[in-house]
Amino acid sequence: MRQNMNKWVIGLSVLFLASCGGKSGKQDITVEMTDTIATETEGLKTIQLDTLAVTWIQDNAAPKLMPSSLFEGASKQVIDSLGLQEGVPASMSTFLVQTNGKRILFDTGLGDSSSCLLPHLKTMGITPEDIDYIYLTHFHGNHIGGMMKGDSVVFPKAEVFAAKMEYDGWMSMPDDKKAQVVKTMTAYKDRLHLFEFGDTLPGNVLTLNAIGHTPGHTVFKTGKLLVVGDLIHGAALQLPYPDICASFDMDKRLAILSRKYFLQYAEENGLVVAGMHLPSPAFLPNKQ
Ligand SMILES: [Zn+2]
Image (cartoon, rainbow, N blue to C red; front, side):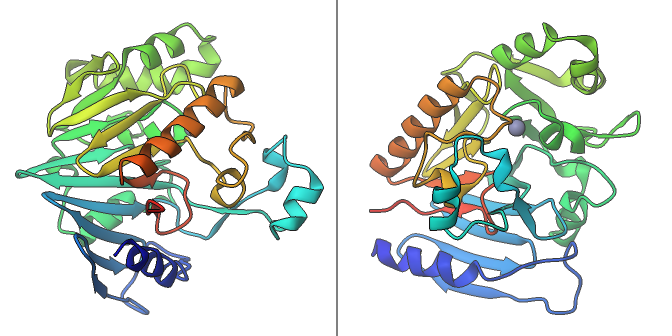
């Protein structure tokens, strides 16, 4: 049964996108699996996991390759053996979960002029006002950037949740490093909620400690879905070699421990992994 899912993901992974998804070349693909129904248009894919409708939303417009030089521990021999000389395929992705009439957005992308999050939401018939909750994996600019447009909030009604460890970690950083975080969290301060790891958020979403990439990097679990944020930056490299870190990982020792732990956790529990930098479409099936 599970093999079907592997075939399905491989079959759909050939799509490369250069815009936010216009009408030309639009594809709709529906594949039925044991417990999952998938639909896909350009830069968007929705899978059904029991009661959860999970939509991958690609924020980057152009195909994305991470330079292999970002992965300091990767030898030329390893890069060559994997055929990654041109770079490691990646994406900048966000995920929308719709359950019990609520809409939860996991991270918000970069928020620059090329970002596709808002156009993709519009394609789905969803306005920023329709987002009930924003759950943040961490505070890097390509994850919180979509929350602001200039000095204005983009999501006027969303309740925002982030780890207290992430918030405290960033607030102790130098002013120039934390400026975007301070501005964004201040703008949302009346709707900002700081959680402790192990807390369960609205929508029955469990928060899990995945620190290392940042001081309070968070993995979220709900049903069969595991949203892993920046646990993986270059899947083709880091799945076979999880000890290799991207230069963005702030505490590399803890980042390696978190990466190994949650990859095993997902496999043992039959979870679908949603990763913000996995190559399109940014889901990993379990390997059972
Ligand atoms: Zn990051």
